[in-house]
Image: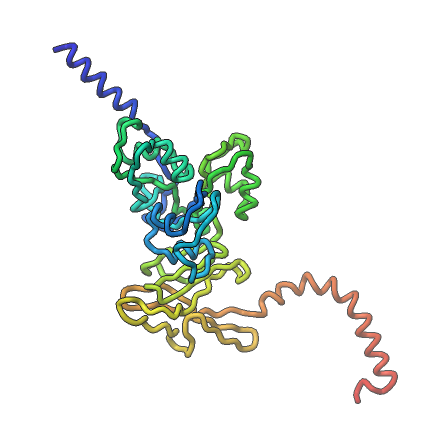
Length: 353
């Protein structure tokens, strides 16, 4: 009896030791959900359709938008081996960690192993202990053909430096540095290090997955909107409001979200009105008078309504802010010439002619 009890205890301990404690995901205390991105490098020649299926991306247009592909791009577009494709997916924060909400599901094939699935199929965006933990697998060497595995992609919904950002999972390439990665994505190295808990940049290892906070365009999308928080990073676009509205983000537009009617009618009927109340403007339209510009901006949607907001901005504010800098430089050069021309015109009688 005693030996049987001891054997049972040892078996239980072996299970505890075998099951990994590793957790996928980045630090995430906000919530509950948002949209996140990861950068996937395909090991082989593939197509957009195959990548969409692998990651379970339900909206093909969303895949096109985050990669800045034209909306007319075919699902059968061929991509060369080692091509990087940005993957959009919903993120959920739970217990201080962010992982993919409704994650990709992979069906085990013959000769598959967890390491192969993590490192080669999913491009090291996850580790095999993370897949093991997410699927409650006691022995990583015992998986079956046809078994479905949840793939927990890392993500976050947190603000960074009090600003809303789009979190992007970047797989570190061999011999790269945090300085190079920060420069590539336009973030400060200090923020990148702090966000990822790195105290010594030299400790960065190849194939680590870094949380990179991409700056997002500002918008007036309401908190009660179905697509809140609606965040787009530089150079991307997205369809929203049941595909009735198309929005895009470009740093050249002062990091302000630009939206307009998509021209697409939803499958369940027509699009709601997109006119700004109290004006003749529709979403994406602007009118100017003197130094003021008024724009009808997208502000979110519900089942039956698309919200709009009239935005007022001064088009002269930039010039006014530049005057204290420009005048001391320009006046010493321009003023003597202006004065000389004025005196010449006064002397020959043409000043008042």
